[in-house]
Image (cartoon, rainbow, N blue to C red; front, side):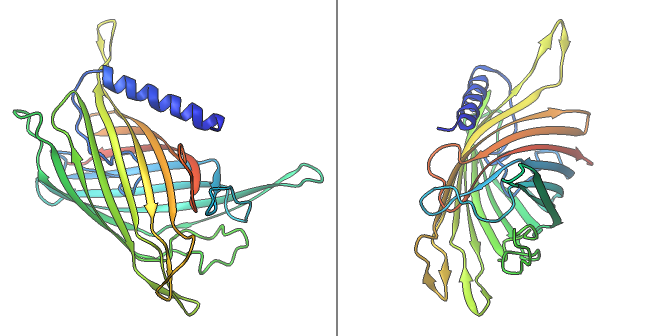
Length: 319
């Protein structure tokens, strides 16, 4: 195991221990904070909320069908800047919209004189539209009753994809090139001092013709399990703001892609990840969240990208 993967695993294990041995109540969902498709989630009593966040990925490592690192052209650093807004449609359901600006960078070292050169390009990614509906609500009087949500989302292919790229290093690629539809369910276990849950989503890409070939990526299945608690700190009689801590793991699997309705051998993808996050109530209506997410923390990374992403986000409840 690589040293940075061992360090991340140690931090993740420590966070899990903190969650187990701390007290408090936390409102959350199983897929919150995992770096998925929903940067903004509305909680009970929130009707309108806005969000802004920056995610920095210092190094991207693409892998092939056998899990080996590829030395091909492409960005090796990425910064995502995201804004989002969410509105409650009912006490049980809400709708969110998000837009991200991507900055791709590539740094090269000249072997002859050890000098580094870099290039970068920025552009808008595909926007995302998503919503959740709570089928079963949490109940204080019955703490073992789970919260069950169904969720869905749509991401239109509006940004430049690899099929329209004119950059040799693919720095101008900001979208997938395919419309995507996402559905799933999120189960969160009751009003306990430590809350755990599991979520599963399926993302289906709509086939599109590229260079005369009908292409369709495989179905992406993401499984997320997580643990959350609300920690209250009292030092020298001063009661500080509670901090919501979360830790979890993800497993992404994508089936084989198709070209002219024929499956492409060796095109399936797999990657496992882990994340930890801390959510602090900064002001009465504001919160700040810090997240570290690692893709490729354990297992084989196949036809995917291994990376560590550091995120800082701010959210405000307007009403």
